[in-house]
Length: 439
Image (tube, rainbow, N blue to C red; front, side):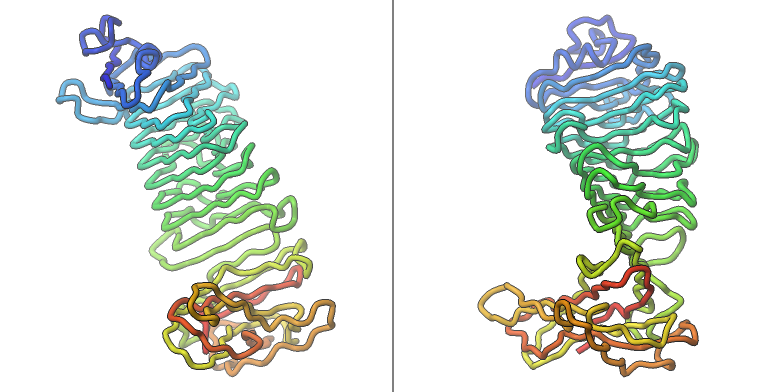
């Protein structure tokens, strides 16, 4: 292992000291070919501040590239907005490649101009990148320019961004993600434009998580654009979102669950907690704190709105709700539902429940129970709930109060989670469920 230095004030020698520092990052990367090599970049480095052509830096092994304060014992120090790799005047594409483990810390990547030039990271097959305290500055005003994480031609890539700042140069710009991408504690900078769509349609499949991120600058924009290419999964967990944000683009294409999933978990624009959302091309589930079972533990209902693309061939199903159970008595679990626009009961071929429980014993395997109507049958009305107008808050005056249960009593054989969910086979309908399994 060796440590190499990058500083515009060096003499461009062997790169093994600040005096002999390489004056460009490319010069140091060409030397860092051994596993565990470290490249220290002066946080005031200006040698790569005015690149005039598209530039690619390709890691040759498992290496770390860290911005440091050379005047303070090489303490890790972010470049911020005072120095950068790229250009503040030219439209240049910047790419960091290499199919290895690569740490990028405290570095600022920037471009400018008006041409469609991307900032691309972890673009090689097999890339495993960690980016910490980096500033990604898409300065070009081109509406087509993107921040891209992961390779366009392969799926073997993971990128993790911790406490990074994302800055956009146009409202039409977006993030493109391929492979696994994790944004942790990241911020969309209010110094730049607010993207109309934060995450666009990538060129390859993606599993993407935003955890603890401040996305409030996106305002009323859309978090996830139409995912027409792959069934991607996006999760937003404990993030600050913009006021009146849109979770995902509608209508979707294809108009079914192949359009992927978007999850909103405990996110809000203000001091509101515990909100939940789940979306795919066949429906949307959102927390409704205005309509709920008055004495319910959740103090919210799950509002389900299905799309015209929903139907019995492949219905919209909610995520599983769990109830930890230690009793071994016979139970018939159920979920209360509310139809808030009609007094007509749903049939068991239109809306039904599914439950999973460990009833076999001596194994964690679960058995699935359901009150769904028989296949190809006309169906029968679902049961009325014991809850009525005095038990819900906020509903309209035209209602049907029902419940969907497991279809048959069963006896759990082991301690553990009982899981339940509601499936809806009706297009363009709205209903609510109380997200609490009752027995």
